[in-house]
Length: 528
Image (cartoon, rainbow, N blue to C red):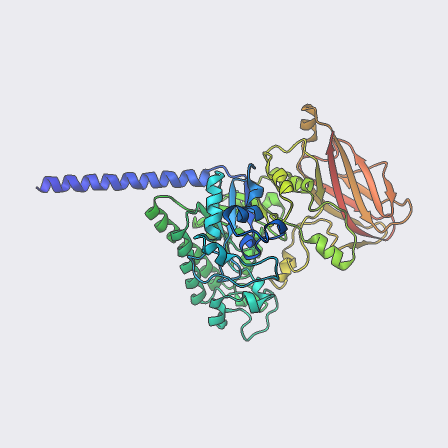
């Protein structure tokens, strides 16, 4: 009998070991799976249903009509992951099995909140996005915004029940904030962290997710300490690190129960130092193995892509560039300023992707582009982003950074962390006679390689100033001045040869012939 018991124990132990080995193999395969393009959905296809689709307004709610609002733009494209946002302000959800869900109309008709309509069909936003992803052979990630603060501007309709019942959790409760949104949740409070862990469990236990993206960029605000003008304390940094460890432990426990692991990533500002100041100790998070890959950047970029990618890779973790819809045109229009066209053109998005990949990124996260024309989105996502030679592009000195989406919006003194240089028409630069502005343009094309493939390109450099007449600024690329420029109404145009720009970083210097204002620069590459 004793021998039979021992034999039974040995068999059970062996089965458990095999199961553990199988799970670890699945986890390694899931983490190492090739992902090049992540398409991040804003989640507003439920709360703003049916956004900009007048043809669907009077039709009854249906699964396909829901997909037509945003999701169908990814069909038959190379988007590997759909990151679906299930949050609408801290504690409000469009997923029914996680807690309180938002069911108020956020805008006047014809757009409406359709949560209850789809609930009557037995589906919520997360169900619909998951079903769509499965049918189209794409991974589905929950994109969880930790402190989305749209409720700051619309508290009457967007303040969640959790905040209404617990007003003391908001960073501006009884105090005047110096940055951040006053209604943001303070993660120093245990009540906030417990609430987040509870709804995190709700998502992992109730939805067939492949992974979770912890979105700390929408919006990058975590502590009252920071909102009142300081930097996160050592205790607050440790608190957030422990919370990330808890998330990993929860994901492991639930993943093992369901027999399939969760892939975990985070979307954060691209500067390790800035992250530490607001409460995110990326070094500690990555050392502790809390994340399987990292998405960096957003509505502002603080560090050169290559520097950030190399640092993240040093931890053995993949690094993705978050390429967000630019807010610069809206800001320039509001300021009645000047800029060059093209920042939201599909050729500009191809250029941004090519530039990020040229700097060593493992892939890209496309954020808030779901409002673009679906045909434009398909064009952006239908190519192998590792080889975009031969496609027309428009490169700019700066793509993002304007309005309320600036580093100082979430950290007093945040602009001191800006290590990138460029030309931003939202902040035109005045140059004295003989003064210069030095910056980098990241070029994603290897024009020599393209030429060997029979694809020749016209490279046009445009510089927008307030110069009058035929007076031209001097433009140097990698130390060599461009020649034979023309100018009309402040727009100087130069034709560059194939050797002017190299793939990767290119130093560009603009020198003022007389006192002038520098508004913008672009490099247009047109293949023939």
